[in-house]
Image 1 (spheres, rainbow, N blue to C red):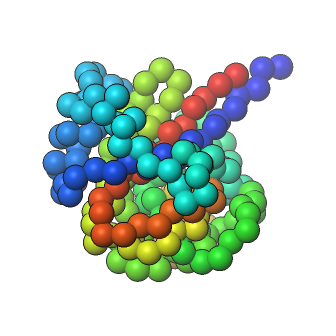
Image 2 (cartoon, rainbow, N blue to C red):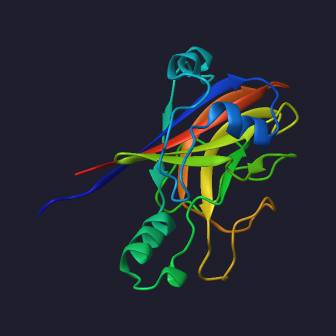
Length: 198
């Protein structure tokens, strides 16, 4: 029996101070209405690599864990027969600042979720290429200033019939990762890539 694996990789890049429209224009590749890439980004892949910054622990990327709630949403979306029954999985990217030593499948929140202004952001874009999707979020100079310790995506919470929003505690945690980063008053792009393999 074939098995399917999903690997989540998170990277961070230093960028100019752009609003979300400028960010999408320069940083994100053009896509069709289904998120499939139709061209190249105005900023080259090489330029993006040169802007990647290490995490506080020296790693160049973090890997996520899909939570039990995230797995349940994936299975639900694979099982439903009508589009209206599908549930969004990547509505909000949250960074937290509380002390945390590890992540588990049973996690239900980012530690320190909503700790300051802009700590919960709506992703600016997503792009599907082959068997991967890249979800990109723009954190401006005034967003989430402080020490980040963990990061995660929030999506629809079926038990409360609630979408995730920029308000702390809304939605349900879909992914979780340790993410040690000190954010000052500079702008950054957080690139959250999911790779599908079997």
